[in-house]
Length: 385
Image (cartoon, rainbow, N blue to C red; front, side, top):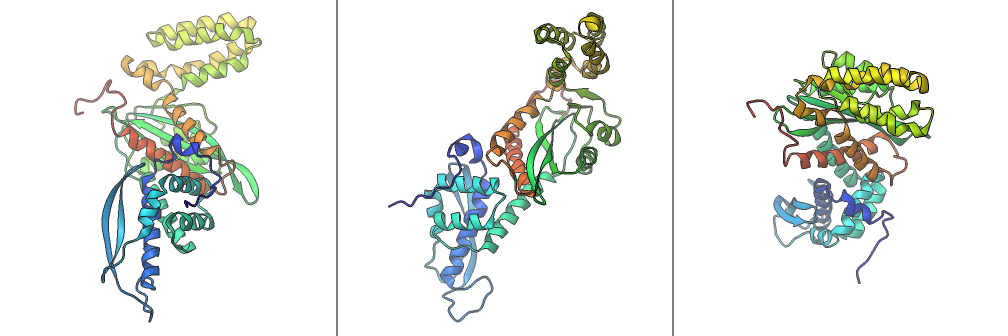
């Protein structure tokens, strides 16, 4: 009879994409196989006991095609032979349940007690809390290595932020999740970085942008973002010489807050759209002057807001026309944020900053790897590409 366990995690989460984390699958089953070998030998690594049944003899790589792609496991060997870990076969037979367990590890902040229980159920072998912690540490090393990998030349840089609930000293607080993506001169797009922190907005943004530069970010010709709290001052401090394009999509959304009547939304949106779709900056500025005068009486708050803000969305006119559609908004990052939200909403409240960073990093690492399979666009690419 097949033993089934209620993991409390909706099965549809697996179908929605949480199964795209083969590295965690490899780490968890490798740890289970190591534990099984120690149990078989009746001795741990380098341990001398009277009950020892044999001697460890390194590992043999074995690549298996799984539902999450090809994964290469390190199968532990015994010098005297006669041992083969059942954890590998049992884990793969229960792959769907195992993937759900991996998802559970992410969304619960990798509780060693929970993972220990789940691993024993799936792989049929006992595993200590220390071994679970070791597997978690290995996973964190993989994610940290990805977050700290060197960057190169990025022509267009996109910045965005979202917020997740995190428990801190018994209180539930909003942690800012900062994400940066970019497009290289050759048209390749990538996720450049991510940071999670409860610190003040400007301090967090400044540290994040500086970390990108410290990793080798260079050649940025334009930064596109919304007007996030603290970002402006941080951007000027770290990337002061780089032009800024305020996201046109968010500008158009913000305009509705300054209208006295809902019935005016369609007309106002059309006027703003005509500015952003203008063939050049001069035409856009002319449309803006006309709109400012048009709404001076019927919607004075909108008129003032237009004069103070809309020109920040015109920087894109200084760049090649074939690139403008791509660089005028942060829509590419908005799609990533929707994916993050879809995955994190089941958590509700993260137990700490680290667990939030772990899940978001894994999602972004997957997305960045997907992007590496092709080019976003090639308009205006350098001659060396």
